Length: 416
Image (cartoon, rainbow, N blue to C red; front, side):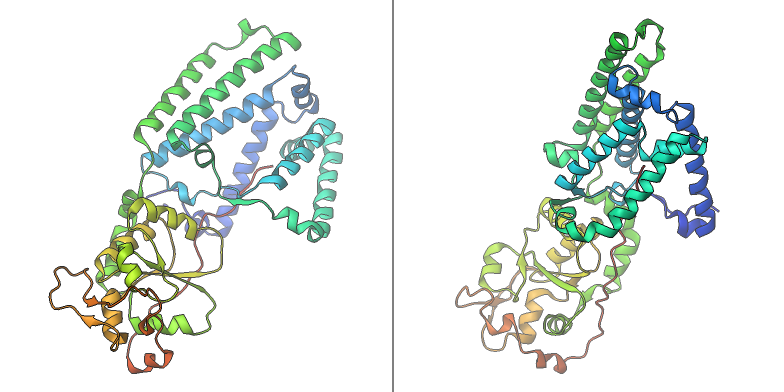
């Protein structure tokens, strides 16, 4: 069966069915284990030699895997073949991660295995690997039974999906180049240690490794030059469906529906984003609405915030009319924010329905997305129309459109 999605990663289980997908996962696992065994990773002395600086194959293999995956991910992302936002990245819990890394490192030194290599060695009948694997299972059971007693620490220092470009404050391409340069320096140092402490003659090492290093550097420069896709490219991927939603008025919600949602008990969080100029927001805005600059770069930042793991959320974007709000909607939807809607007719329509005598309609207005009402004072959300009586909802007929679905973010993955 052919996968029908143009941009990876593909929903393998949805396309192939659960059992075929599980079969594929099994084959990948067997091949991964075979690769580890062929690399000597099923033999604990080879792994332990890493800590004596005699045999640095662990560092070489792991760093090679890292830079290969990193380069291909961001190269294909830059080419528009992969949507990196849907690739699972383990959330960062800073101090729990540091402590866990120390514990695993100590276990690695003592036992000569990590979880993945112990499973590979156990499959070959290694007795020490079987004991090590038994220790892992015992530890998993003990952790599951006691984690509630230190849950505050375990879930503490959460940084979400935090990556090197964010930490360093540089572009993804520059980060890829930097990591590859660091890896090559580590490769050189590893060979020096092997020669000094392991008796390895570097002259006997394959010459093609130099060409491989050059190839990685060349690909890193390609990633740096082509960059990563912005929200415009993301929108192009979904433009057919998204434009149809706008044309069919599927996402423009009646002001009365918004008023009803504001006042009723709900099982989801409501976020209202006002993208008008700040001066107009200060004159009048709907109660609990948040002012957001309609600059796409700012909206991308807001999208990242809204995509953090949280309760189910409905987002309603508003401007004076629908022009600015529609453009903001496109940015948010392109950045994978779920359940985004537009206030039908914008603030102008809201005031027409709920403004009563607090505002005066302007006589001359140029432009669909310009304010149609004049305010005596800049009272923000202290006008009655900012938070009208819920009973006014009954005066209007409308088709409810807000449906809050769970976010379809990247699925979790992992490595032993």
